[in-house]
Amino acid sequence: QVQLVESGGGLVQPGGSLRLACAASGIFEIYSMGWYRQAPGKQRELVAVITSGGRTNYADSVKGRFTISRDNANNTMYLQMHSLKPEDTAVYYCNADVRPSGAFYTYAYWGQGTQVTVSA
Image (cartoon, helix red, strand yellow):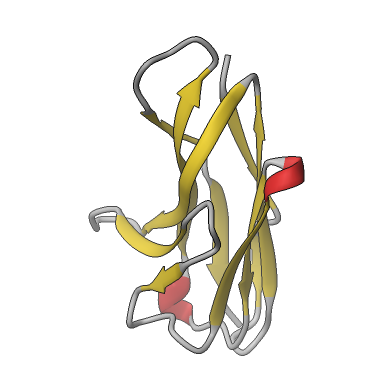
């Protein structure tokens, strides 16, 4: 069974940094991975994505401040966040396109989310 587990969220002051991690477990092949976030009363939005080959794309609101990366050998993805702002406060979710062992198709899997709060 494929599982995604996020870690690294917490409370940080404006201007601070946090590093999120998403660990995938199970027997599978992972394609693209990404981070999404959802603030209270808002729709879930894309933060950053990374392909299996390492190509990245970011939301305009986080460009230059966030960096997405992945360790394919350990099936782990990271989001390094710098210069955090109060508007970055949200639940951050890990997403991955995965082909489970024995499956013909890929499926989208989500983690349970980790809270990031930016406040003085």
